[in-house]
Image (cartoon, rainbow, N blue to C red):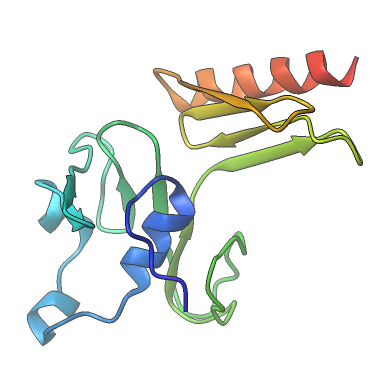
Length: 147
């Protein structure tokens, strides 16, 4: 099973949140209990107190977000580890991907970050102030690359 050594994407955050709790007390906690941060690979990743809820975990820097999918509710289905689709679990909250067929260029939006990569596979990532700004930047980049 994939175990991230950092939280670089929403997929990493979902995997961390899907890890079995260490204690019964841990099992009762929600992301609101972890606003100071989630410790992974020797680094503390604080959560955004204005956006994080009991069922939504958002890193304070805006680079990743995961939401809780209750049992019986289909999720977005983006996971690095096998997760039963209708089981209760954490999954990627917001993301979009566009690529140019067989070409290596494309654009990926992960919560508030937008990464544009060229035909050589080199990418640049921009962190936007809001999810709406990131969605607009994603659409503009995909349209630009498609033309």
